[in-house]
Image (cartoon, rainbow, N blue to C red):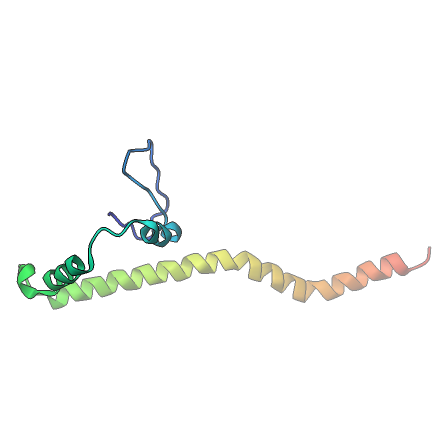
Length: 119
């Protein structure tokens, strides 16, 4: 299984046998519909193997403070970009709401006066 986190889009040029391309909405449903592959005993053995420290090799280098700092910087940049993106999406809606609140009542007075004034 390959999981892509927040891809803009996924394009598959041709359908391959045994390959399913799913979005996050359909992944859970697809996983739950799949047949059970492991018996309960096999699952217990697998969990024990995965949880055993001997299964995993030691890290080649411990996490360094600079690595964690670099990650924090990237994480802040991503969050800033997300906020900026949402702000630009909301800007037109907020602008129109402000225009309607500020200019709506005077405009409506003029419209009502023009239509209700006898000629």
